[in-house]
Image 1 (cartoon, one colour):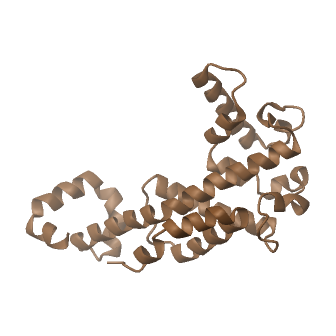
Image 2: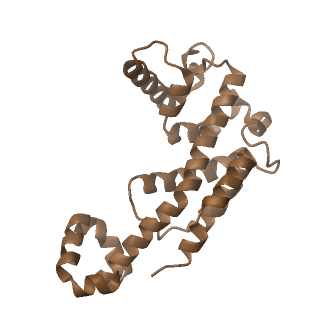
Amino acid sequence: MQELFKNNPNLLTELRASISESRLKKYMGLAGNDEVKAILLYQWNARLAQSLYIYLQGWEICLRNKLNNFLSWKYNRNWPYDQARCVRQLSKTEMRRLSEAVQRQESERRASPASTSAIVADLSAGFWVALLSSSYDVPYAWRYNLARVFPHDTMLVRPAAWEACDRILSLRNRVAHHEPILHLPLDQRYVEMQRIVAAMCPGTFVYCEETCSFREVWGQRP
């Protein structure tokens, strides 16, 4: 690709315009203002995001389903509508997120109540990660119940689980919005994802390990 752009400067000009100078600025800085190298770093960043997607997907889907199972166990399978016991325990932010998800699903499906599974899929990753924060230590008794979410890592404690998931969430959001991630300690994030996913579900861990190409791509920095 490097030779392609060197031999076709008009293509490079058009690509830079499409990416936008503001988005390319960070890559230009990392490349010492070498525009071809900046594009190669931009491409590498996209490949890193692609390589991590399988783990980010596995983490998010597994986390929300584990927490849904926990809430169904603690309250009932219809917990999004359990105002008296479940919803009242949520912070204002999570209460708003849940209310918006319920309203969207009822509107889209023209049904009230909407199914819990539809609401669970609608809720953002940020909602689920927030449930692991210290705000829910008392209502969810995480000191005793964390193993219901992370049954395969007896050494994992709630603060460490929340901190790791919060960092993974930040990475997930940057990938989703096509932001730079190449400057982050991705090797550390990868190890965190491995531990958190394995703690939730060994099957998901093996699935991700067999599919993820992060280690290979991480070693190919231009």
